[in-house]
Image (cartoon, rainbow, N blue to C red):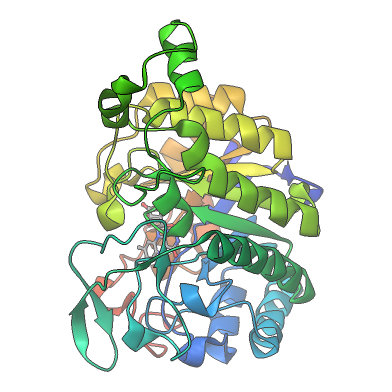
Length: 386
Ligand SMILES: Cc1cc2nc3c(=O)[nH]c(=O)nc-3n(C[C@H](O)[C@H](O)[C@H](O)COP(=O)(O)O)c2cc1C
């Protein structure tokens, strides 16, 4: 009997030949932010996956915060990606592009002169990041996004979705995880706005509904309410508006979203409303009709575990497909699929060093370990030579 991982699945209107997903992974080979022949080869070699999700790809010059990451806003980038999607389709695979706007996780030395480093609030990310010209550099303080900036950025996501289809992608994953722009709106560490996009104090109505008190609750509760994580409705608004704009452009059946509840990457912090926030977000994404939700659990990389209860609740309430990820091997993948914890399983690091991962998983062959020192270095070493 074929193990579940290797059985076909549907995703939106697509047929996937198996349930193995190549997880999105930034590899920093896109010199000049344009996909190239090396990337065409890398993705083409991994087309045995049921679905490839590309590395984080920026919808805007303002989202190209890391060195050598690709974009999807210029005609040159669309043409470069077209070669990648042709290679994957030619080898019988399917491919989504992950749209990642880095927001505050950016450095001017990695970006064009006109680019702006934008975030919900003017709070620098902790620590430093790599730049090709000056090595490690502290994160700068981002500019607080105005209403116009927010509208423009949502428009950039929509245009990038249209570009994705022009470039031959089967769909788009919106990166709502790991402390990048969408997550910067979701998280209280990065969003201290008091407007409708903000995590500021709960609205009186929201507090009243939760507490079962009359909607005339005293505004003097403000500080206490802020401490509780602020307005869930406002924090999810950017994620929901981006999803709506993307769906209006290319159809919700071609869109998924990646989320990382309780993630701590890039300075994100948990808060008492996390469960409520993600369950509310899932409801809204149901209303938009997204094809899938992709839940990050980086406990295999040393991050706190996402509670099994929250994962089960998201699974139960989300109507589209559910992609599991984080530290999977074939045995655990099949066990979790058979326990109905998800529909598809993403593999990250194993795909870096095993282009033939699907065959190896199927035959229980030993996996080649990845060389971390070449995860983000330019050139073919550690990229197309495994
Ligand atoms: C080199 C590298 C780059 C990554 N880049 C991204 C990225 O661009 N977008 C994203 O959502 N996750 C990214 N991740 C996280 C992976 O998608 C995945 O969640 C993580 O590696 C855990 O899965 P694994 O245990 O199968 O490797 C990256 C991980 C690695 C190792």
